Length: 82
Length: 189
Image 1: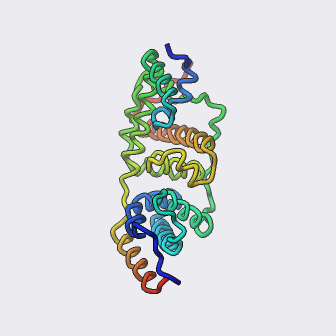
Image 2 (image 1 turned 30 degrees about the vertical axis):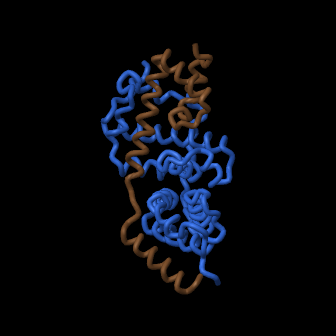
Image 3 (image 1 turned 30 degrees about the horizontal axis):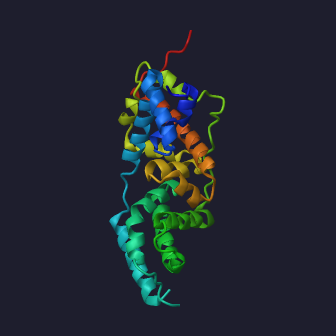
């Protein structure tokens, strides 16, 4: 039996999904989720939100032109010795 | 001035792998691609000049992000209309989920929202929220590393993240309703 009630489990949910809980709390939240359909549903909702952020907002990469400009500026600074 | 030197790995080896992260965080901080580019370049040059202060083997990403952030605060933050936090305190924390749990319980409407709109919604968050959200949920930095980079307690990181995510969810939900990706909750009669 999990010692967490729904309110407590939900309070830990985001940290659980982000793998920021202690192993003891992870186990407690997991047990609660296994037993509680309501909270499992909410966990899926939070997870799809976090996955969406990770996959969509991290797509942008440093433009090649900027990378080249930075490398040139670094080499120039290196030559000046500062 | 002596050549910047650090035993082991060179500046290029330590710093260049983090350019994508620096650029994305700069975009979120400035909300302006041109300013973001300048901010990343300034950051890299400052980092190069203080390379001897970097302790090899420590967290280069956090070190670079601290420089980026200080540079942003000192030289770039001139926004006239800084977004403000929504007053979510009065709202029950899981109200949004309650309103979709019958129609879209797994939150699949999130996947219908276009990338540009997601970014726009993030950029409309208050600066403190945007920053932690970018570092945690976009760059995947652990809370402890964020706390160190921003010089705030882990508890503050957590509470800002919690509120940032809630505000962002609320904005994206409204957008999804507006676009017809999801049916609005029927108002109780």
